[in-house]
Image 1 (tube, rainbow over the protein chains, first blue to last red):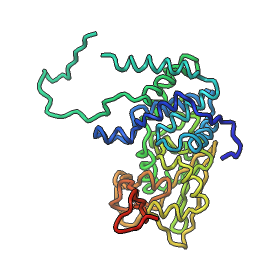
Image 2 (image 1 turned 60 degrees about the vertical axis):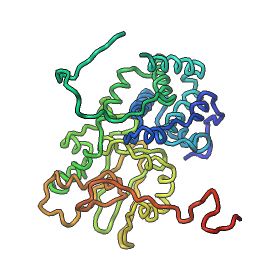
Image 3 (image 1 turned 45 degrees about the horizontal axis):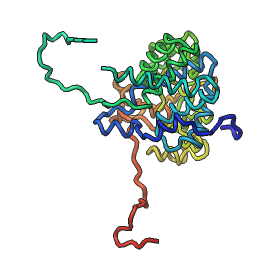
Image 4 (image 1 turned 30 degrees about the vertical axis):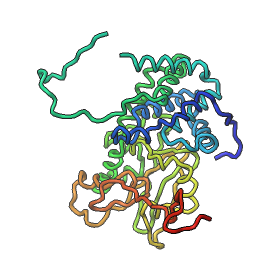
Length: 117
Length: 248
């Protein structure tokens, strides 16, 4: 693991807001009597990492190094796999692959879609 | 939009209860969907590529590695082929390292070395750099394998770390830690345990768990699942003085 880093450890408001809710799978699963150790989005997250790696957009080694450093410096109190998700998005925001305001807007759209009856 | 569906049971009452599920939508779930949709819209990857990787990730499991070990234990010619060219030998048990892209995945380079244990040599694998893991054979890596705690400490104090998994090796057994890298994957071929003579490949495969192929456990008759001991803290910290202890 490298001693030097190009990772920006500045807190990101959108991700801090999500983290502060504390709605991680290890909290919610027992509350609902669910025994699956991983949330349903875990595999999709892994596939997203693979897709970014295979295209060269976010090489696997760069992503994992950033994840390690962010896990230690910023998201140490977040369990897996939420920590992996926050670190990935943090890295994508740092690299300008997505913009924070676009992501916040899309999250509102996605939530309204999921909550539609 | 109205919607109805049936289960092909003629409308009979269901006697079974649905499995419980988390009945709230968290922002983590929403975040994963939102960032993926934006990535696809920005052309970072396609929805089809993501679907293909997801399908592949859901198809891999340690059972493939268990089958390889069981077959190697019972078929010396197959074992020789495994040691000669493990990726090629994997095709004999239905595992193609080129999936799902035709050239593997960025996390699973198509070079595999199988490390054969002997009564005096024990291997254990790690990836100190990140979390390289032989996913086509062992499925998704366990969370502890990805932690810096395991990665940093195993290479320094392998016997101590193995003991934390409940594996205490006698001093006459050499422990060799193999560090995966960006171009090569490893898995452990453990020693076939005594008491398994005349077992079928299926019986043998049942005792070759994921941890045995990482090298943090040994196969033995009757052990068919990876269950890690939970070590209680020796001096638990209480929020208030108990049992007459005075606050410091």
